Length: 191
Image (tube, rainbow, N blue to C red):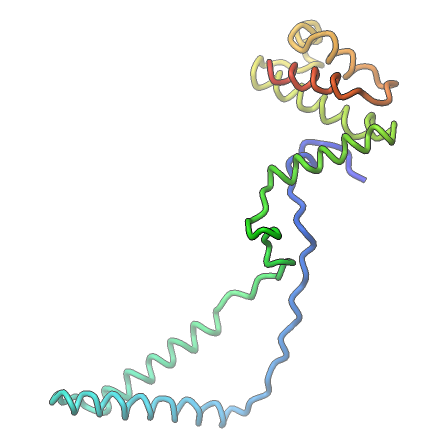
């Protein structure tokens, strides 16, 4: 169960990540790999020399072969240091309508669900909603006025207003109505 802190509010929980199955390593013989690359280099060399001969250009075959061997070596090195494939999310990480998920929207939806559940589960309001409201109030007071509720309670009470102050300090309270929550949010926004 979460403690209802700011980290929970702003954390993003996406759809479960499905682990990609480990690719089965194909057991190819080294000789077959070398033969395949030699045939590839030979075919590319023949085509290049034929194209150069058709254009009346003379280039050493050794130079063309060296070019393709070097190119093949670079491609092999790049394939060896390629990053691992990323885990697959359902729907490729996109929403059903093709848009990417929005972290803020997900956080707001999570808060809506928490607040809806708080009406049916009285302890949820005291456990999850009130601590986060208190944390938000302290953070706004600290950022805007350089105080917290603990450091200067009198000034904090003046800035927060009596309804929000009472809600934050009345731990026996089980839940709040929608209009009360709206009043608390308005008080936090005024800070």
